[in-house]
Length: 243
Image 1: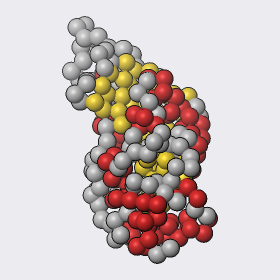
Image 2: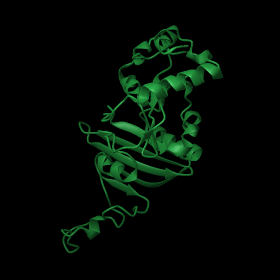
Image 3: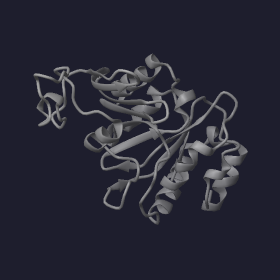
Image 4: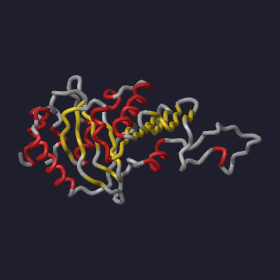
């Protein structure tokens, strides 16, 4: 299974029946190709999850993902534009970036738009991986969310759609509203735990800012393309193989 065979392999839909030897060969291919990739990488997403690189293996069970195929960083970035299979969608798990793995692509169908579904996913990820984060930003809709969960429980959450809400104790790096130099307790109001807003600010402190992942980031290993249902192969996803 040489490098130029990955495209036909994906196109034929045989990846759900790969043996261990073939998976190792594909992983070697991805690592070899990844060695020639240079940042910056721009992750085209407004919704993503993050788990520790050392315990990321648990994410596949937590999100019920199947038939994973090793891919390079740039190959995985195409996931948002890839065609879906019947009852199955591809999800990209990045290589390790500064000690973290990011998960994105088709989360609206893989996880679901419901609040309980979104929060349930980050809780399950934290059970399987020890810790998990979620970031969501919808500028047009006015939604902005970031979440930190540990061992199945949400430790800290900020959410805004109409009225902002803070849940849990502030994290050490947060700037509390009541400590801001412009806050006047005589005229201003703030919740005691009101801290850092905006997902794009929080992700810089918590893990990785995805736009861009720049040349200073330490990138290790290869990424994964996985499906949201088993035994469907990856037929129709051959564009991911840029050999």
